[in-house]
Image 1 (tube, rainbow, N blue to C red):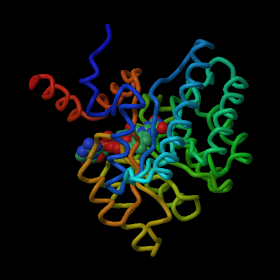
Image 2: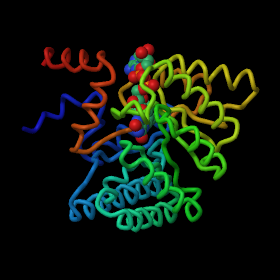
Image 3: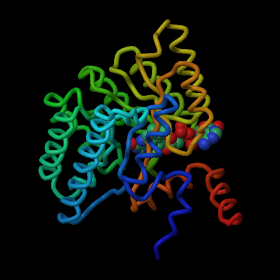
Image 4: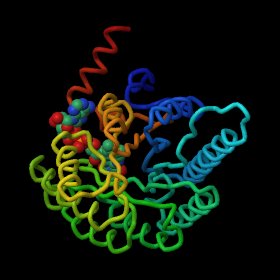
Length: 296
Ligand SMILES: Cc1cc2nc3c(=O)[nH]c(=O)nc-3n(C[C@H](O)[C@H](O)[C@H](O)COP(=O)(O)OP(=O)(O)OC[C@H]3O[C@@H](n4cnc5c(N)ncnc54)[C@H](O)[C@@H]3O)c2cc1C
């Protein structure tokens, strides 16, 4: 059964790229930065992998064309949209054949390099963590300006990954982690995850390359602000990142306070797994959807 899109509308911008661009442009006009994420994950069929690659390439072209038409326009179309996308390697064939995924990633990064687009590799479940880190490390030397990775604070291995990424001077988004993982490989208690997150945030801001501090958690946001102010670190050394539809007022306050802030904008018709993760991690999100349903 296909769920109606209006259920997800608070968390997913639109089902099409054409519907998403005006929303992204509106956020950029308020001083926010954006990253666009075409939803979908764990593709197990080669023809669907080809389709996913094609869709990602079209998205890069569309963002590039949109920024060029803004530059060329006599009448200013106000602000442009960042050429910045987030992708999932499991859509490029990671679970079918790692070398297929590598080749697809190279095709994508070639397009990114030629259009000056930044591609962030989202981090998925622990079954692909090692593969994602090692594919990233293979492509990074060739595309260091155009590719970044995500690390999850709940994974026990992340301390080591943070060190590896600092050494490479790779751009890291640090988040808590959204998948259900076993106790042997992932911290479970929120207090433990927050402690690890804070440690990695400090390391990445001090020794990393322009990390993305991705959280809606005031404890971690305040810890970040306190850390940079105590250590006289300027606000252009990192950015905050939040998800579309979450804490919209806080996002704008951050911009007003002079912090670079990027909004992760998911879109596309394969929104159910992403939507389910948002409902699972916060009961207020479920109440919001129910309230919306009752009002209709
Ligand atoms: C930009 C971005 C990209 C991400 N990319 C990935 C990825 O690649 N891989 C991955 O596994 N996960 C990713 N995530 C998801 C992430 O791992 C967490 O699952 C998600 O962010 C929830 O953790 P949190 O720290 O934001 O807050 P939570 O742990 O959900 O909440 C902690 C506290 O924060 C406050 N809070 C949270 N949300 C709100 C709200 N809407 N309004 C008011 N207060 C709130 C509340 O006080 C709450 O108790 C990403 C998250 C972001 C923001």
